[in-house]
Length: 323
Image (cartoon, rainbow, N blue to C red; front, side):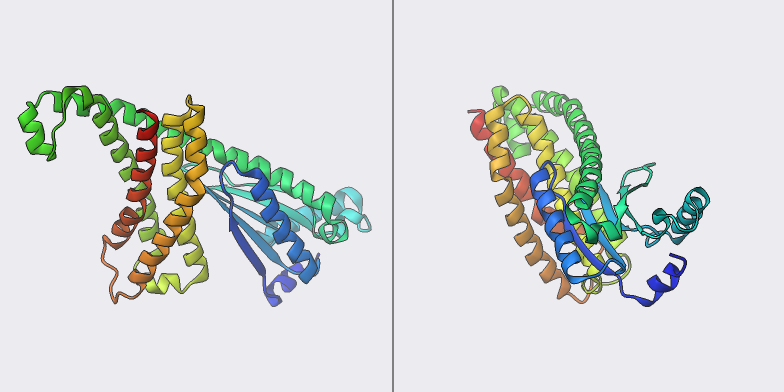
C-alpha cells in the first residue's frame, strides 16, 4: 500500500453509478449486486474504482480507502502497522469504504470500512453482504431525511391552507368567480384551499430543484456544455429524480398515510409517473441543448413543465378516492 499514490495517479479509475429508489431495498440490492459482480468479473482487485449511489438528498460512494482521501489510507496503514506489525495480513489488503454524504445543511460525511478489495474478489458473497448492510443502513438514514423534509412541507401547507380559505371566504361568490375564473361555492372552499397550499409546496420543491440545476450544475456555461460533461449530466438527471420523489412523497404522506388503498394506488402508478417524467425531461433537456443561449429562467421553466403535470396527476388520483 506504500505505492498506492503512484498507483492511483497512473491508472484510470473505474466508475459506475445508479439511482437508489426510496423504499425499494430489493431493487437497490439487486442493482448493487449486479454492478459489483460485473466489476469483479471484468477488473482486478488492484483496479481503482468508485461506485456512486445517488439517493434523495444524498450520495453514497463505494471505493477503496485512499481514493477519496489519500491521507486516510496513510493514517490507516500507520495504525495497522503499529498495532499488528509489518507482516500482519491487515496491512496488506486494501480496505473498502462506504461513504455517505448527505446534501443537507450542517450534515456530516461518514465513512465506514466494511471489507477489503481483495476479499470482494476472493470471496464475493460474504464481502458483498458487508457492503450491502452498510449501504442499506445509510439509505435508511437518508430516507429519514426525506421524511423529515416532507413532514415540514406538510406542516407548512396545513398552516397556509386556512389563510387561503379565510381570504376566499371574505370574497363574494361573484368576486371569487372574477378572481378565479370559475364558480367556487362555500362548501368547496376547504378543498380548494388545500389544493392551493399543495401547489405552493410543489412550487417550492420545483424552485429548489431548478435552483440547484442552475447554480450547481450549469452555472455560467451553456446548458448544452453542461450536458456534454458526463458527471454534470448524471447529476442533472439525479436532480430530476430527486425532485420527483420529493413531490411524490409529499402527496403520499399527506394523503395516503391513513388510507391504505390510496397509498397502494399511488405506489402502483409511481413507476409510470417516473417513466413519463424522465421522458418529458429528456425531451425538454434536448430542446434546451439546441438553444444558443441559456436564459436565467430556462431551468425553472423546464422543471415547471416537467413536474407540474406530475403534481396534477397525483392530485387527480387522490380526488378519485375522495369521491
